[in-house]
Length: 133
Image (cartoon, rainbow, N blue to C red; front, side):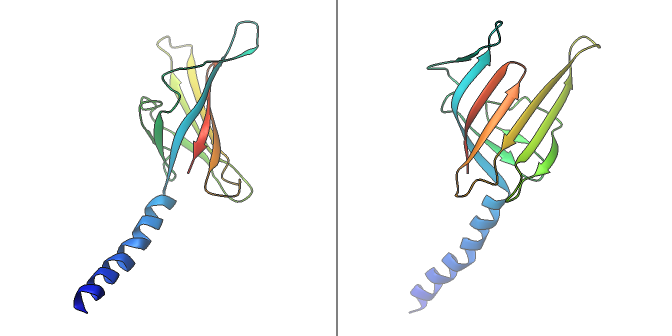
């Protein structure tokens, strides 16, 4: 009887922690990779190494962990996401020359019903799309 009680106690105590952890992050996977060609059209890259890669986004800070976007620093969360609005993060980094900047943008459609939320990541002419949970 004690054994059963201990197992149930562990399950009950750890279950809310998992829910809490999941509510603070997005786990994302890249499903398509494309870039804007010189003529303005969009080229979908097939069999690219970024397809299938996963990354994690911290909802509070906008920090991203994973090979796809690991180099991005100093994120600014523009919108936290809700039932009516997307989660939005912006990165602005100075280029090597003092006159230029790089701007990167991540949009996760938090308002989409269900666990899977589509995302778009834009960096210059690069466009990555996929699903976050």
